Image 1: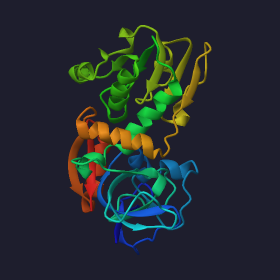
Image 2: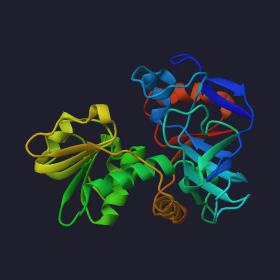
Image 3: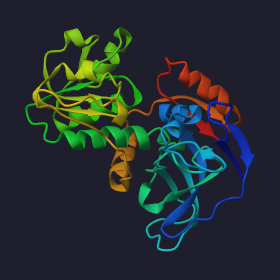
Length: 299
């Protein structure tokens, strides 16, 4: 099969021919029908995680976290899935020799959820990483009863999910975004803000935009701050709890999020579809900023 890998961090991503992998116990193999491109993939290709010792691959490093496709093989002890089932899954972690930027990928069966009828795999490919990150961040923040939540980057991939899911859970949400994002944030159910100067102190902050101390400053004493980048989480002050969400597989929650996407309650945000051969060009465009929605790689 063909796969996109990082051989030399900071240099061009390479397309290689490699043996099609076989699933181990409790694993499945999926023929890719879509793999979303996320900022974490840009950082991996640049060597950010190699430099801090999070990646130790002797030959090459795989790319991608989001999987949507069709099951082609089952490992032992896999129940509830069959060959031919269309699924989405989270391929978590950066330290792996092969990832979803490939014609086929191995994922834990426990990370996969069947696609609801009518949900396009390309749309489904945008869901696992971003929606699970938002949902699990809200889990960390706990009971929303009569509480206010600031979401930074509220029109972005993770922030957009956090606004809608937060509103659905009962939070009063303030969404921080650009002036051009105001209508999108309002439509999602949040009060828009274009500057932190406009934000009254909130009970909790979810910070996908990684504003760190600036976002912490508008969080009430004794409040709660959740970020997405552990190195960028500010130190606790004024009794505020600070932590980062560590996204992990959760097939049941992923299945729920996919159902919400299929019904339109969570909008699928596909910016464009591109073939695997154009992965370097896609990374350049994403790294350049200003892209709303996700590029989805198809083999």
